[in-house]
Length: 538
Ligand SMILES: Cc1cc2nc3c(=O)[nH]c(=O)nc-3n(C[C@H](O)[C@H](O)[C@H](O)COP(=O)(O)OP(=O)(O)OC[C@H]3O[C@@H](n4cnc5c(N)ncnc54)[C@H](O)[C@@H]3O)c2cc1C
Image (cartoon, rainbow, N blue to C red):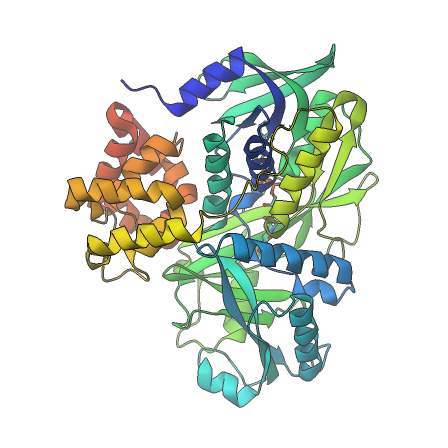
C-alpha cells in the first residue's frame, strides 16, 4: 500500500517544530501558507474539514472590486479591491477572467438608471481602465439581447466588467494549498485544533486527527488563527482576547439549468434592494444571493431562502416556465464573517465593511484574521508574511513572488507540446473549452505530467462522468497530489461536478466507480458507499 501525502504530513506535524502553524485552510489560511512557505518560512497548516470546506466554497465566485460599496461611499475599499482584482487578473489570466455584468434597473428604483451607469464609469476609472468600458443599455436593447429578462418594468440598464473564478472558489483555494505544499508547507486536512497554550516562547497546539481520533501536539513559534467564522471560537480555546469580533451574514446560491447561453452575469436588484446575480457556472447557472444576519455560523438552506431566490428570479426573468424547487440541481450556503470592533451583536451588517483585519498579539506571536474576501487574498498573504518578520520569524526569501501562474514561456511550451500531440482533438464535444486550456488552468506546470500520461495511454483523456469535464488522467493526478480523503472532497471542491451534475446522474454514472477506484484503491467501495449515503435526500 502506498503511503499518502496526508499520512506523511501528519507524521511531520507530530515530530517537527514549525516557525508558524496556521489553523484553517480556507482562502485566508491557504494564502498565508503559500506566502510564508514561498518565502522560505517553515510552516504548517491544518483544517478540521477538507481544505476550503467552509465559506470559501460557498461564495459567489467573483473577484470583484465591490461596485456596490460605492453606494455606501467606501471609496478607499473599492479602490483597494479594484487593485486586488487587477493583480489577480494579471497573476491568474487563465483563472480570474473578465466577464460582463448585464444589469437591468427597474422603474422606481432608488436611483435613476443613468445615474447607476455613471457609478459604473467611476468604478471603471477606479479599476484603472483595465477592463472593457461600461455602456448604457436601453430597455429595448436588453430585451433584444437577453429575451429571458423581464423588461416590462425595466427603466434601462448598464453593462460593465468585473471578474469571476472560472473553475470555482474551492479549486482556487486548493491551488494555493498546492502551491504551499510545493514550497515545503506541511499541510493536512481533517486535523482539528482543540486548544493551544503559549509557554516558554512556543505554541503547543493540541490537534486531533478527525479520521483516526488520535490526539497529538504541534509545536510552533507563531500561531495564525484563520478559522473564518470560527476565529472567535478558536481564540476562546487558546485564551486570546481580541478587540475585533465577527458578526455573520448568511448567503445562499441555487444552481439550476442554464438560463442564458450568453456567457455573462445577469444582474438585478432583488426585492430587498440588494444586488442579485445569475452567474454562469460551467454548463449551469448559479443564482443568488441572500443576506440575513445569523448568530450561529453553522447554517443550512431553508425553504424561506430557496423561495426568496426563486421568486426573485421568476419576477426578474421572463421564463417559459417559472423555476420551482424541483429545478434546483445543487445549493451553496455560508456565512460572511464580517469584522466588527467591539463585541459585535446588532450592527447594521449590510452596511458593515467587508475589509479584512489582522489583529496581532505581539507578545504571544499570535495573529487572528477577521473578515476579508477572496478578491483581497494576495494582500492577506503579504500582510501575514510582514507580521511574521516583525514578530521575529526568519523570512529567508522576503522578495519571492509566491503567487501566480507559471510564466508565459512555460505556457507557450505546454501549448506547443499539446498541439504537437493533437490534444485538443481529444476534447469532448460537449466541453466549453479545449483540453489544453483546461489542463493549464487547473494544474499549471503539473499539466506536463498529464501530457506524458496521455502519450503513454490515450484512453486517459477520456471523460469519466458525462458533463463533468474531468478526464481519467486528471483523477489519477488528483489521487497523488490533491489530498483527497473523501469522495466529496473531489466531487464538490477539487472539481465542481456535484454542483453541475444532477444527483441522479452522478449516482448512475458508470465512471463514478472507476473514479473511486483510482482515488481510493482498496478502500474504494466503502468510500463510494459513504458518499452515496451523504447524497441521499434528507
Ligand atoms: C454568500 C457569500 C458570497 C460571497 N461572495 C464572494 C465573492 O463573490 N467574492 C469574494 O471575494 N468574496 C465573497 N465572499 C466572502 C468570502 O467567501 C469569505 O470572506 C472567505 O471565503 C472567508 O474565508 P476564510 O478563510 O476566512 O474562511 P473559511 O473559508 O470558512 O475557512 C476557515 C477554515 O477554518 C477551518 N476551521 C475552523 N475551526 C477550526 C479548528 N478548530 N481547527 C481546524 N480548522 C478549523 C474550517 O474548517 C474552514 O475550512 C462571499 C461570502 C458568502 C457567504
